[in-house]
Amino acid sequence: MSAQTRLVQDFAVPQIEFALVSKKYQRLIIDNLNFAVAKGEFLSIIGPSGCGKSTVLKLISGLATATSGSILVDGMTPENARETISFIFQDPTLLPWRTVRANAVLGLELERMPKEKREIRVDSLLELVGLSHMSRAYPRELSGGMKMRLSIARALVTGPRLLLMDEPFAALDEMTRDRMNEELLRLRDELKWTVAFVTHSVSEAVFLSTRILVLAPSPGRIHADLPVNLPNPRTAELRATLEFEQTVTAVSRILRGARSA
Ligand SMILES: Nc1ncnc2c1ncn2[C@@H]1O[C@H](COP(=O)(O)OP(=O)(O)OP(=O)(O)O)[C@@H](O)[C@H]1O
Ligand SMILES: [Mg+2]
Image (cartoon, rainbow, N blue to C red; front, side, top):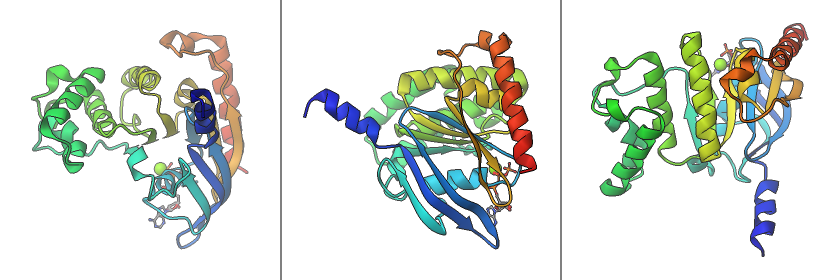
């Protein structure tokens, strides 16, 4: 098989595939969700509070199991795909008694990677997220943006191919959030993950995504599946363009429609 054929086949397996997926707790939360995410896509999921966005990420990661239907990640069950996936939450949940470096290295300690190899990997990751100069500091000494960078470094340390992010920048001020968005895209260009990203900010979703899934509530279902055809690479200047503003307005209107759907 040629490298080209292998590449085509590799891309042909979707990174995430939901077929008729429903999730019930006391009541039906997710109803018959069907969608596939190709490798390299940046998918944002938006929708009213309680419509099931976090539940969708939990289902992808295997933290929750579907009541019916099938979920494949990289062609495997979520349980078997665990090594492929990293989950980043809104709350960085850093270990306060460990330094920045020791927090970042945690995933590799759990994997029992040899110390020397581990040190090199962590050094280059801290460099990548701009935290080398803080490696001996403790979480309490970090700003909100730095804590989130550390949380990202910790998630990247095991070399995931799929990143799940649940409102990771919601607690940050707008300027820091914008900067984190730009940094996230820069890292993604370098490390080539597929991303499923949950946010309440339409402009954040538009800036980051190749595609936006809008969920309607009660029960959670797909209201709209929107490609975002803005130029790449996305830079800070994009936010000031008419094209960006018009896209945000259009997506906001569709989101309002989902609330009353
Ligand atoms: N473990 C659970 N047990 C029972 N109900 C749950 C559980 N997890 C979520 N739910 C319910 O499922 C629904 C969807 O929750 P989910 O957290 O996925 O919503 P969301 O879209 O992420 O909301 P938000 O925007 O507020 O974060 C809610 O009604 C919630 O109460
Ligand atoms: Mg949520």
